[in-house]
Length: 253
Image (tube, rainbow, N blue to C red; front, side, top):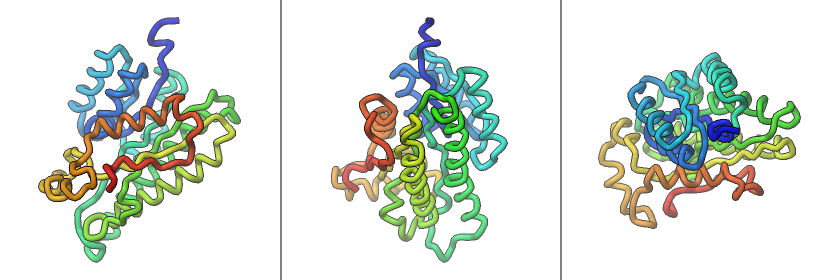
């Protein structure tokens, strides 16, 4: 069996930047082929794919929007054709929406965030379970959802809308993990806290890391690689008895 044929396959939605890109790099280093999705950032996706291939893996880049069911189905079909059934799904793609109080949130903003963060995660899980479940003839697998400490902290004054979607992701993780525990699938989530990515500046708060970092019990923001390491642990046999768990990666925040 060739080296690439022996490699497992990990899907990482939103893998062109930030935490997603770090997960792709860590996956390649751990011996995975990687299918990563992007929306609008082709150059970033190509750069990450190049790093995956430099580490010895194969990379598949898929342009797609997790808010669109047809794009999700196409993603999994392309993975099927290229690698076969996936071994790991990381539901990383998501948005925070505009900063602001609840009284400023529009119905359109709510619909957009819910569709991407919640519906997209549900549908990606659906397609993964269809392929992974031993009940359906699959060989099992792992799903890791991207939650946030905001789900518990609430996001007051900033992102209550985002926090609520991550609360839904937690519920998805608890429920689906129990639903498919006997079918060879483990379902967990990571809940990052304040992480040093461009998310904060893109949301209109470029000073957020500097302002909030000293208040983290460990005294600093986390790095994307520190989240990726926990994702890879959850995907590994070392976490074989862990399911329906949400793991904080937050420096105590």
